[in-house]
Image (tube, rainbow, N blue to C red; front, side):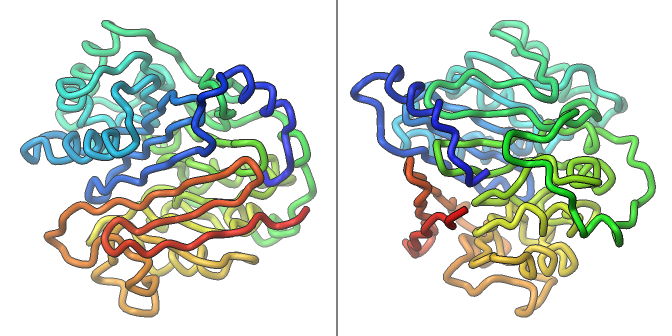
Length: 338
């Protein structure tokens, strides 16, 4: 939330006098999967998901390249939001390139079969060699210098509103549920990442009905500064009832060239009250100009691309800057007074 959590200042002091002054976030292009690297002012790192398997080690190499830019030599916490191959598939290739210290997941998979079992088994074999945390709603992932709170996991959501949240959500009156989702998507780990006055949300591939549980009858989260598009901007997620209640200033869409970034989901974000800009990892090639950000805000324009990233740097006062790795386009945003 944009509300101040002053206890973070104590955490920052404890992190040491030489800690970096900003939170860094790299949104890494893994062609419609997810890989988001957080580097705390304390220097500790958290990677959310690892992209696809195979592809000549493409996604692992892109993650390690971003880690080097951020002076990260190990992944302190790897959060696997759920067990689909575009999120967990790249773990073995990544682990071959950079050490992973602590693995975080939601517990056992509810899916099985040839498109799930090999990737879950490969992940577990590596997880068993490190530390392992099973995330539950309300938990904190113990990264020094920032606050990382689990909002959803294993199909459950936080029971009570966060401090400063809990206002009735008038959008719930017109909210409509979709068909129940029994898949791993609905069991995604969802996170609220906060650095003093800055906050952003990453809900993995959480689907529509679970989003409504966070938003209705009261908004359990409050407002945020940055919204990472849920489920790559597919219209199975991104319920306006939640997105508009979050009132983000900026959205980052981790879509692929032909995956996610659907017109319905894009317009939901675009019409969110108070939104200034949408930044995209890819141009959504089938969506048309009306459903894509201006090209200066898009990291990758073509189907066969260089895998450019988007970087966010946040300061303790809530000011943050977003940079397009393709063209160097940079824009600074001021926190909204509450």
